[in-house]
Picture 1 (cartoon, rainbow, N blue to C red):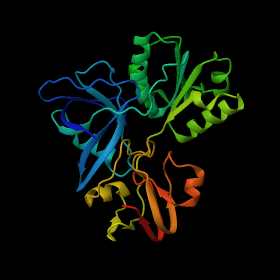
Picture 2 (cartoon, rainbow, N blue to C red):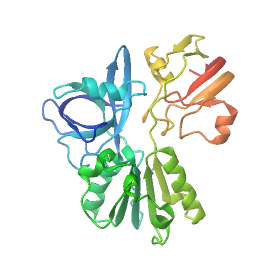
Picture 3 (cartoon, rainbow, N blue to C red):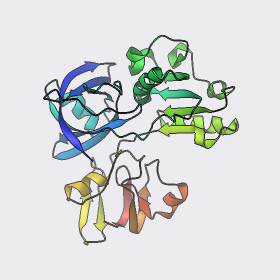
Picture 4 (spheres, rainbow, N blue to C red):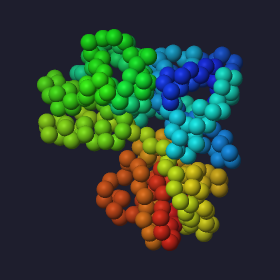
Amino acid sequence: MSARLLRVTEVASLTPLVARFRFEDPDGAPLPLFSGGAHVVVEMPDEGVLRRNAYSLISAPDDGSGYEIAVRREETGRGGSRYMHSHVTPGTLMTVTSPVNLFSLDLRARKHVLIAGGIGITPFLSQLRQLARMQAPFELHYAARSRAEAAGLAFLPSAPNIHLHISDEGNRMDLGAILTGQPLGTHVYTCGPEGLITSVEQAAARLNWPKAALHSEAFLSPPPGKPFDVTLARSGRTLTVGPNQSLLEALEAAEIDIPWSCRGGACGQCETAVTACHGRIDHNDHWLSDDDRAAQQKIMPCVSRFQGQHLAIDR
């Protein structure tokens, strides 16, 4: 995947846990334009581990002067978000990939319904700009526990088709009401916690929505866990995956070539065949089917881990 060195030109706090970062070309060159819902991958040299985290672009898709992302600090994570919050300041040079879109608007839709939970508002901020430019009908429903935690509030206009659902104000989201009575040809997009995505899918199924009209995105951070060993079937090498390292990162550190795009269990690029499994694969992706997970013959190295005696993969 192509990448370039960009300079951080601004860091701003959106909430106590979420910060906005702006990247620009050091020489002022324009950056590639993108479509609403796109993401970039940011590289972070974190204590000997090169982390590559995917973040949705929140800036205008048609503005090539810079890219903006919002990062929520996760204290119990592996360290990527803490690195961004603790080490990145204006002037920092960072490697950033070109935009990739796995969550684009379906331009055939007659109407777009956007449903966001928490930090899941981020891909919709660029989509809102695209929808406004297209003059396409839409409505946004944004749920958060409190206004203090609603990082997207600063970017949202006051409009009748923008709906806030703040739990501590007693205004919880009613998915049945949102999905009922929408015009034929409406598409629904959900981003946020896995529970929200599942709830939207279940509500839509009860109301007989066609599956092709439902879209979701849930990038996952590789979870920490106990170290485990993995054997590479092609060479016979054995690697140890550290507690705060993903299998994908361990493969990259060993200079094993492996494709990737989202690094969050959503795109399927890094899917790898399992040649031996004596134990349990902890599947943390949104790509493999239930049957694939039960068979334990495939693994997504970007987010999945292993517990047991022996794991071998086709690399």
